Amino acid sequence: MEATSTSPFKIILGSSSVARRKILAEMGYEFEIITADIDEKCIRKEKPEELVMALAEAKVVVYEGAVREKPSSEEEARHFMKGYSGGHAATVSSVLVTNLKTGFRKVECDRVEIYFHEIPDEVIEKLIEEGLVLRVAGGLIIEHPLILPCVKEVVGTTDSVMGLPKALTEKLVKEAL
Image 1 (cartoon, rainbow, N blue to C red):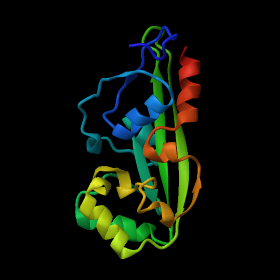
Image 2 (cartoon, helix red, strand yellow):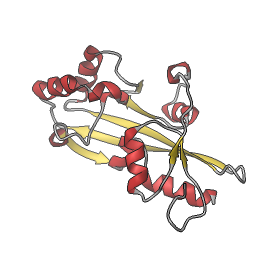
Image 3 (spheres, rainbow, N blue to C red):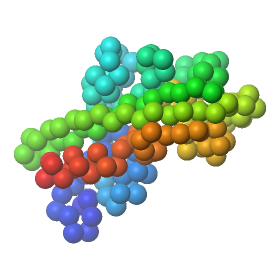
């Protein structure tokens, strides 16, 4: 597949993330998906920036210095969201671009800070009942209609929080060509 109707290169997305697919499509790229069958929990690094680079397609949520991955239970998701209420969290994403013809390879990180108003318990319960928060890093979905009113400020971009910073991706694709 071609990246655009006039582009002579193909893009392969190494992620099964629906959000990353959506963002890449919004950027006007056509792509195919080839994912690696890896257990991300086996890859450990101390710094969030080092972890996302090691995972090379990941986003992690950082709360009070601790890395938060997908919640392992409804209780953990509830605990995560109650912690964000009236507080703040950060997401750290990495983008890795490899030109398979030339061997060029570059990875960079993007960090976003998210500040929250109080998140009502009924909002937390509805989100848990819906189940989507159990499938995302840190149980954090700032673009969700129930959470949007609780978001006070985003320092950075929503696409980065969703897992693929557009500007950084575009920059690295251009550098790779």
